[in-house]
Length: 71
Image (cartoon, rainbow, N blue to C red; front, top):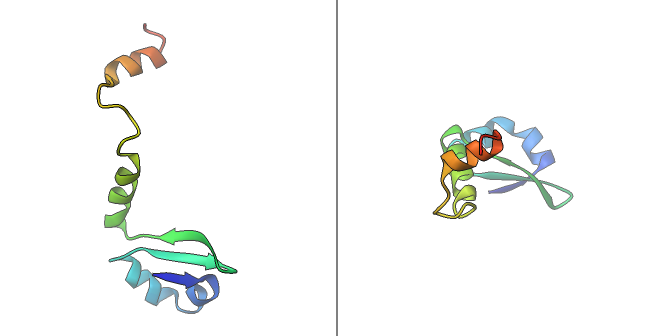
């Protein structure tokens, strides 16, 4: 759902309830500026954005050791 910042201010409770089940995009002058997500959707939203960023063959322990200067 897309809603203007002014509408969000006027009916915050309504959109807070909607955000518990779906994403609410807030616009200012017609430009998207923020998203309101329910707690249950936040983890999925973040993990979906991370999928594919790292190659499958990355060894997390090796990367950690490299960052700590152990290798």
